Image (cartoon, rainbow, N blue to C red; front, side, top):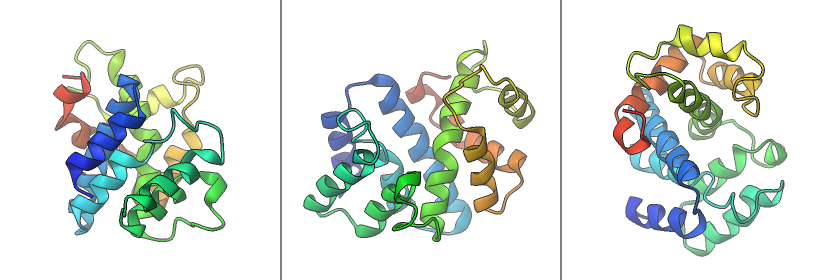
Length: 185
């Protein structure tokens, strides 16, 4: 599947502008990490674009990811991408453990990209100048972006064997590169 085909599939299944932007932010972070770790940025980027494409149709676990995986397999998407998408959901952990770089990275950036977006939206300069220190300060405020799992963010950094500050900076930098598309310039 090409990036254009992945984007069209996402748009076919996802009407929400914010969910589409989330896919773009996760794609940017995945491509960034692919380059950082010397991996294929096309494969990693596709996993980022598609990771939640099925969420609007099947938001309830375990349908989210599993129903989407069926669609992706029917379309001939690389099994490495399909299993990475399955692995980012906790309910699939037994069958699809986060034991490969692609799987680890997708889990690691998913919640963090959402949280960084929330942080940027309350700043006049959006992503410009957003620091790991500011993100970590917001993480301490339980009511801020309450649906985002702080444990997942911390566990993601551990999975990548990176200090939390460095992981946050990687994701902020990746998102800054597409800030205009995200509406966060």
